[in-house]
Length: 315
Image (cartoon, one colour):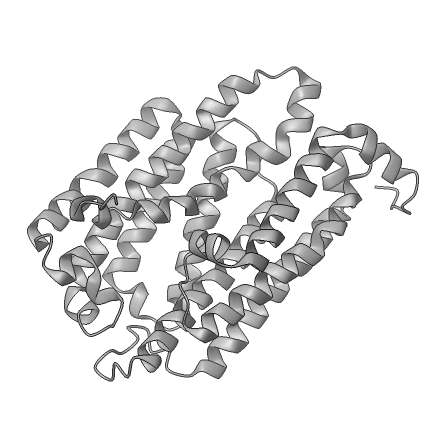
């Protein structure tokens, strides 16, 4: 069995999947890019470069975060296994990685594309503010996390030199705000299940009902924004006639959000990747959404057929 070295665990490669939020700009721009004759291979490499930049920058701040939170993490039944909290990696090593990785990746981004560089720099500044105090500010912590994911989406658009949709930014913000509340809920539930009375939420999330309200609010807004985008004139402009067919994917979005919330209340892992791999309903919901989206994007004939069936606005 392959054992991940502690130094690699510190960089949290399992969390690199979160940089999937760099991809929507490319995915939703594909129909228009094909129509305009844009070189898809170049756009793909640019997107992958943006993903790599965010992975490296985020890993650096993970190392800093784990170094600063080592004492608190030792009181948590799961976080105590993190490399620095467990003693597998020294705090000095964590600080060195945290100081080196973000600047190197940001400078590389500037050399690749100035727009991506500025967005990655903004992301880095946000992470500095988060580690300096925002992560201990009730409410601001989750919005800072969601803001970081929103910058990932903007970075994906900058990498391929495409204008960013306000609908995409709003969808990413509310969806990741939901995930941030889920993470707090998982931490709280795991601590309660393990009777870890010495652990306290850094931002003061001690009421599970408050977290339920936060997940319901952010998850509901994520669904509403998705439906509004699917029925907007902007979606027709980007995807062409029949873009309203996206609304048929809404049940899969709701199913995944409901399942994620249930897992959080049970104290299961807050990792989206772990949820998809461990939970059959999550896997089916995510797979069906991805398949449905791919079909709608790949077959303009289907969108045109839907356009002849669905009543749409004149936008």
